[in-house]
Amino acid sequence: MVTLLGPEEDTVVHEFAALCLVSLASDFSSKVAIYEQDGLEPLIRCLGSHDPDVQKNSIETIASMLQVSEHIVFFFITSIHFIHLNLTQCFITFLLICQTSFSTSQYNTAYTLPQGGSKD
Image (tube, rainbow, N blue to C red; front, side, top):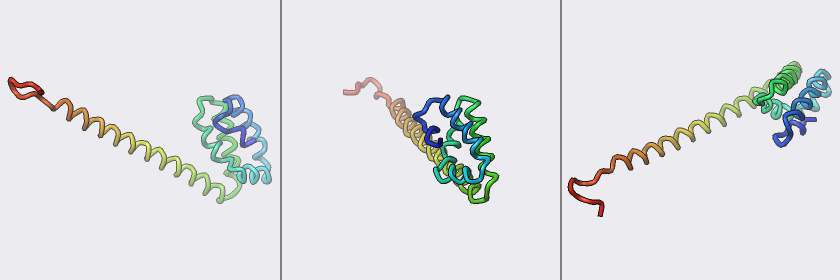
C-alpha cells in the first residue's frame, strides 16, 4: 500500500492508498509494517498534495502512527528536520543565484562609454 503513495502515481491512487493506510494504522502490527516499509516519508510528502482528501487521509494516518511510540515520533521529527534543511538549502541557493544575477546585471549596466569615444 505504501508503494502506491509514490510520486509516479495519480492523485486518486494517493487518496485511496492513504485512506487504506488510515484503516490499517489502527492495528499495532500494521503500524509496525507501515513504519518498516518507510511509510511515513511518502505520507509526509502527500501533505503537500493539492487534493484536500489526500492531505486529510495522510494526516489521519500520521496521527494514528504517532500514537504508537516515541521511536516513530523521533522518526517523524527527523523527517521534518530533513525537509526543513532541504528547503533552507534551496533558499540559500536561490539567494546566491539572485546575488550573482544582480552583480552581473549591475556590472553590465554600470559600463559607460567614454565621452566622445566609442567602444572600439
